[in-house]
Image 1 (cartoon, rainbow, N blue to C red):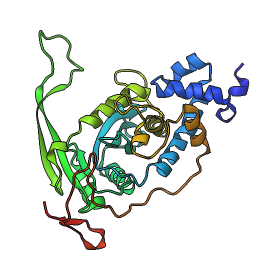
Image 2 (image 1 turned 135 degrees about the vertical axis):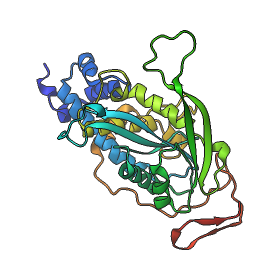
Image 3 (image 1 turned 30 degrees about the horizontal axis):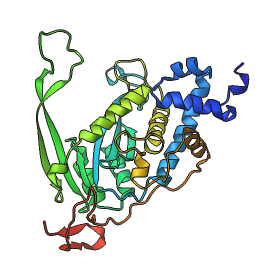
Image 4 (image 1 turned 120 degrees about the vertical axis):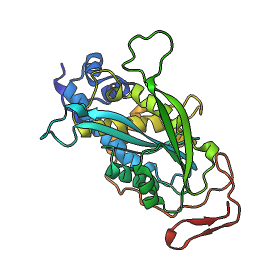
Length: 326
């Protein structure tokens, strides 16, 4: 009988771990219900509680990050219904929902993420959150979304080396051979242009390839983001909780195939591989805390993933950035 398991806060720990294990591996809520026997409502409450705790954990642990190369991108999803079906009078959260993600290129650590509409407001919130977690002037790469430069200039000032990767698409669909059904085929990328926006970025390292691979990981392991299926969020709070759970699991529990350790270990944020049980307990016990505050950024020192900047650099007053000989 499920009576004793009807409320998430009394669900036995082993069953909580079983439920969360299915969710972080890409199973949907209904699939998890069938596999574990736990009621759908209980799963959703557990997801919300653990996901919100993961957000608090991320705020406490992923701060003062000393990384140089960062890639950023946005991934599309939707809440309740697709944007084309949103009607006047529907809640403002319905329709398109984009998740902005910033990832360290070398350690693969997801530094910051933010879910909302793809607009100036969400972009600025995301960039401000990223800025508050760093202690080193970053080499930052984004796509050509026009809201990025203003937000980056506002929050980083002169303390950033920023380059843009602009993909230029063909009007034709991408396929070879005889024509069949290509409604879901992406357009072919004709060429890619890169341009310097701020600072003096090493253009050989300006790329969004790694963060786009992270987008695939999200679509494979978050059922709500899987394309061409009936898995989607009906509430924004549940959507955000699912994404926070994914990134906590990705950063602290999931051993990266290339690194052989977790991204958090590679970045020096954690000293061991977390078990899923450990993540759940810490997330549920994590209290509300202060969000990270931006600190004055330092220039990178020479080392793996960091180029030497030499001694010909002088910090401008009032934290406005650096004057460098390049």
